[in-house]
Structures are given as C-alpha cells and as structure tokens.
Length: 232
Image (cartoon, rainbow, N blue to C red; front, top):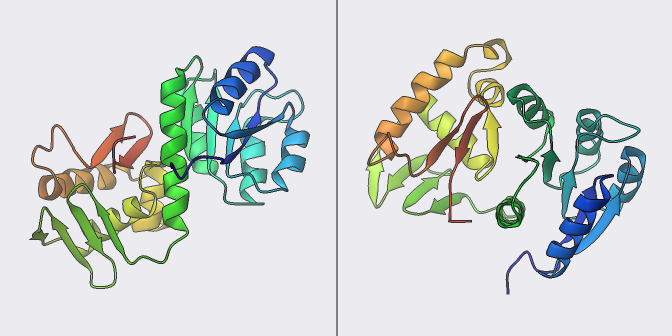
C-alpha cells in the first residue's frame, strides 16, 4: 500500500470547477480531501493539521502569498501552490515564503499526483532520524561526512559538501537560489547568484556521469534547483 493512501489533503481554492475536478480525482485514489474557499477558512481548517495543502494564490479575502507565510508559522505540512500566476517572480516568492512546489494552471492530473507523492515522501523522510541519505546510487553519510556515487567515494570541498547536504535536506523539493545562498554562504550572500552557479557546476562534475544531462541536480529555470530522488 502506498504511504500516500488515506492522506488528508486541504484544497484551498474558490474556483468550483477546479474544486470538483481535484476532489474527484484525488478522492478516487484514496485521498481524503477537505476544501476551503477562502484564506480565513484555510487557516481555520489548517488547525487540524492536514498532511498536505494545495493552495491557489488568488483568494477572495487574502493574498495567497500572505497565506503561505501564515500557514508556515502554524505547521510543517507540505504546500503545493496551484495558480494561474505563471511569472517567475511569483514562483520564487511563493517558494521563498515556504511553499514546497508550484504548479501553474491549467495542469494535468498525473502531474499533480506525482507532485503530491513526492511531497508526501519527503514528509515521511523528514520524520526519521536516519543519518544516511540514499537514492539511485547516491549515498550521503552525514555522520561521517562521506559521499559516494555507485560505491565510489567522492572528494568534495567543504563548500561543495555544504551545498549537497542543503539539497539533501530539501530532497525532491524546489530550493530557490536565495535559500541555498543563505543556507550555505550566509544571509550576506543573498544576491550572489554567480557563487551558487559556479559551485553547482563543480558539484555536478563530481556527481554526474553527464553534467549536461543531470541525474541528481535538476535546474528549475529562473528559480533554483531540485535534488532528484526516485521516479515520481
């Protein structure tokens, strides 16, 4: 049985057609779907700690970006934004405020299901104290600071290692450039994108068989990066 089976999902959207479609498709696959049609109702329903939140940014009483900030202050459930706002600045802002993923409307059901599975897998992993990350031949032993790919040990610089472990902590999620810069280099480097791009390129050369076709570190154009694990 899938770990996602029976997960409780809070859908925050005031478009009746979207609500009907999402509720029907998720319900038929074993998810329990609750609906909130406003920001205030979403905050109220979030008090019961859903497993995952699907959030539209265009709500009648509260801007979705403000709602993300409020929800992040109340819990750690993954937030996937479903929005007609497709501009990169909106995606980056939502992710920086704490959203875990972003889908632009219209979207396909299979893509939505895949993003939900990834977000729920990440939640399950985050709830463990396992000090070793393993996925598709990549092993990161945090306790011993040892990294291997297909059994071969890699020799990473301290900065390369810090960047990889930052991506591991957010595996399968989009991590914006600003988030990575602040985690690895500190808040004073929030705008130094070139630092990040240089180190991602160096890390890919050590991790990837073909850095031009990365298996582990995917680029989210204009937004940031995502560490890929199993197939969704």
